[in-house]
Picture 1 (cartoon, rainbow, N blue to C red):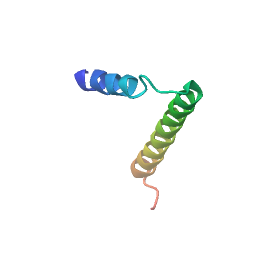
Picture 2: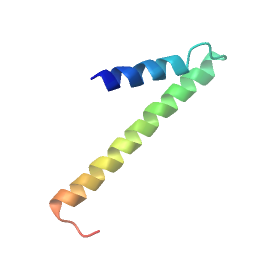
Picture 3: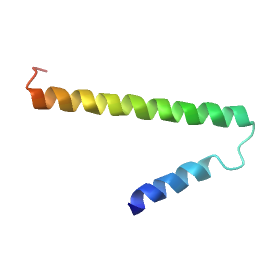
Picture 4: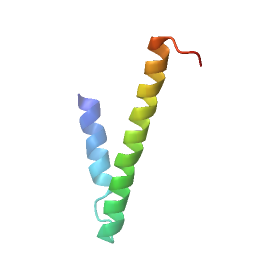
Length: 55
């Protein structure tokens, strides 16, 4: 749990004092988009691995 809190503080600190604010919003949206794509890729890999599909 401490590791997640550390990553959260690093994420929040990365955007402190950034100007202009629309760039910060764009970067935060991009970070969420990348996290979503990574989650989908891991899910697809695990689904194929556990259901026995050929690679």
